[in-house]
Amino acid sequence: MDYATLKSLLAALERHGVTYAVFGAVELSLHGLVRFTEDLDIFIAPDASNVERLKSALCSVVDDAEIDQITAADLLGSYPAVQYVAPDGAFRVDILARLGTAFAFADLQIDRVPFDGLTVSVVSVPTLYRMKKDTVRLKDRADAELLKQRFNLAEE
Amino acid sequence: MPVRKFRRVEDMEAPTWRRPGDPALYRTMNAVWDLGARMSRRVHPYGVTKYSSIEQMSQAQEKTAREPR
Image (tube, rainbow over all chains, first blue to last red; front, side, top):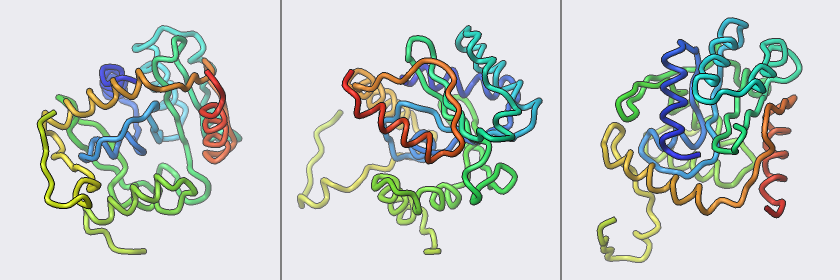
């Protein structure tokens, strides 16, 4: 995913009034530690109207009927993690309605941060730290440690 | 990118944090992602794929990453 695409996606989420929060490597970059990533990770509020707004936002960036396969019934039910890859592979969006039993959208602390002329929603730094510190991926745990040092977060 | 000089090798490993909102941050994101996108070998399957958990999604993505292009 290139920078211009990321900006288009986030602008579309804002324009369409999607209730969302970015997390993962994109969020880390927005906080000042630049990480290459191929995907945009977003939590979304799991209600049907918000999922429709998300679909409208994605359709405004790429005209693709496949986007209709994203459904609130899935996200609210058996498939809380949905991946969408654009036709030319130009970008990938990982959409989460919940993260195991540890994180649901309603539990998240959400902040608004600047991004190149936009203001976008991200999970709070302490929340991002908690998400990363207990994962199996070594790079996530390393990033958690960097967040802890940078933002003087307390050990949990 | 300007030349940077370090007094100790250990300092070279330290991550560079930029200030949120600083245009330099966006320039760096642009440069890093442009380079990363050109070098990436991953080809993700087109379309919508549904997973029962983020762990299942991560496993599938890692598997895709290991497959030859």
